[in-house]
Length: 453
Ligand code: ADP
Image (cartoon, rainbow, N blue to C red):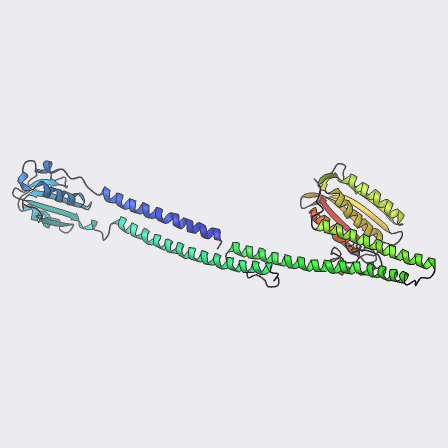
């Protein structure tokens, strides 16, 4: 059960129980108060015959009369004259005279329906009075209704209270256990123990917190592995040209090339390898800047038709120099805007177009095509960069966006394996989508979809 639901139940219990108890007891006392009857004062009853009872005696008796059950009738008679002094029965008004034997008659006549009691109160100083009480048999109930109601309420409240106590105990135990598990797990993650999964248990919120911590653990683990791959990739890619540079410099130092032409050739190789190193280091710096968010996006609304036309013009120049055919068709109405960081997106298209040129034979064809498309109710600008070059193997397609990944058929081309990783980072930073389709020997298509404003 959720901690929120548990707390809600608990709070309701804590609030409801005292209210229910207070209301019940108030009702009970209120009801009892309603049952106290008004009794006439001493002077009114005994104004003609003071010697029948003292004021003290009447006080005691009136309290009995006032608190009698509602279904009990009381008649007080002067014992000597059998005259009614006070009666709750309307047919016996004050001064009404009963025959001496009629008391017994009344009692015996209705004895099947009523309980009668005829007595002289013992606590009175003078034994001058007769008290006749009458109560209907069918009205006698084992317990007053309110008392039973209050008892039921008390039992239910006690059960709710016990339930609340049990709940508090469970909650505290579950939170305490979960927090300890989470604390230990967080400490393990801090100390770099990333292999052991964190045990998922407890209430819903704790479970989702544990799951988040597990995700964090896996993310940290993946990040570490990524860093390791990154460092290995850099070391390998830096070492290879460095080793060559070192070899050729040593050869020059040992005067192995004898003729000036040979020395020039060696120097050219060293220069080319230094250039490769420079390209690689620049790619690395760009990748790190985009990947770590250091290259802050400066967003602006860009006219996408204008942007794509400019990109295509620059690409046409580069392709012509490198003897490739470049064509383009931008099928987007003028004035449509896309929010982007122009500098980064230019870099993204440059990488894709330069790959298309590099992985295509001389006279190869490269095409940039752009059109509008409704994707899940959102109008997007789709840009396809298509070539008829060497293509990519199906099982390599999933890896081409990874850092330092170089396809098997592309090894003869120089490259850092970072071009598409930079593209992917830029696309991610814009929340856009990119996909690649390819057929070895026939060419590849890279498709980018970016929402229009
Ligand atoms: P690089 O080109 O420096 O090797 P990239 O990250 O740009 O690194 O590309 C990764 C790999 O994807 C390349 O090595 C190549 O195998 C493959 N690739 C990328 N673009 C194309 C393309 N247009 N045609 C064929 N293969 C491609």
